[in-house]
Length: 366
Ligand code: GDD
Ligand code: MG
Image (spheres, rainbow, N blue to C red):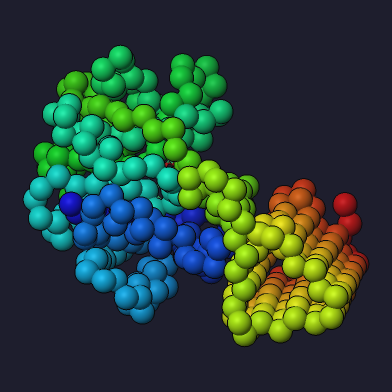
């Protein structure tokens, strides 16, 4: 089986992180997100995939060129302007073999069994089968209404509150027959959700497959941080309580340091005397956590420096950020690459600091 993974979006809801790091490369347990997608495809019997790229393609391609793929084949197509979800798929057509294709959004993390979706697709004789999951609030997704035979009756992308008739939504994973690619005009911006699925629904050949497995779109700071914490506590590996306690042998640990599971600590990190790190935290390569500092429930990208006495809780800290003495970063704050947070600042309530901003000491409080 072949696949196309759509990874060309700008990741605008994950800014300021995605100004520097494309969404497929943000780390989960210190591995780029996209590697989980590749594992998902491989374990479902896919042996080649085309990455449909646009925004910041180079880091993605460079990452895979360094990986051992053991027989899994990856191709890349890059669009010079955004073609949308169907346009990005059409753009990958020349790299496909003319048979059915699995298509996925590049930002979903799931424990779903891909084989079951493929099987359901084969049995129904549909032109396209969409995997569905249920969420509390469908307004940020594609709402999908089905009948008792799993035939799709309605597909509404980003429904308004008064359009919500079900909690089932498009999980961003499809199996498509080659005819569907023929419905997409080439070289134009086309949305599969707004233009192609509604047309397939009208022809009566759009089906769905409902999954109750773990599923999350990592496209917002809240869902990305939750996904990271879920991966660290083993939630996607089947639900059993498994606490990752991963630390690279190269890390330096001072006196009276508390490391609380689960955690993932990459190579060359330094944990100075009396600091506390963990509780579903991931530290990227070469982070330094100062004396008596606390880092809990957070994601720190590579090269972050946390000065003594600073506190970071439930937040996302981009690459090479510096957090000053006794500063407090909490409440889902998101700090862009290389910013410097001066001593004694308090960042809270989902504040987002743009890359390379230099915040003078004691300039913000909440
Ligand atoms: N190649 C290419 N070109 N890829 C794109 C483009 C583009 O112009 N625009 C978006 N993508 C990729 C994104 O990188 C992402 O992996 C995927 O397509 C979906 O785009 P998002 O921007 O993340 O969409 P969404 O999260 O608002 O909604 C989509 O996903 C939901 C599930 O997570 C829709 O498919 C919804 O129907 C669905 O419920
Ligand atoms: Mg998304």
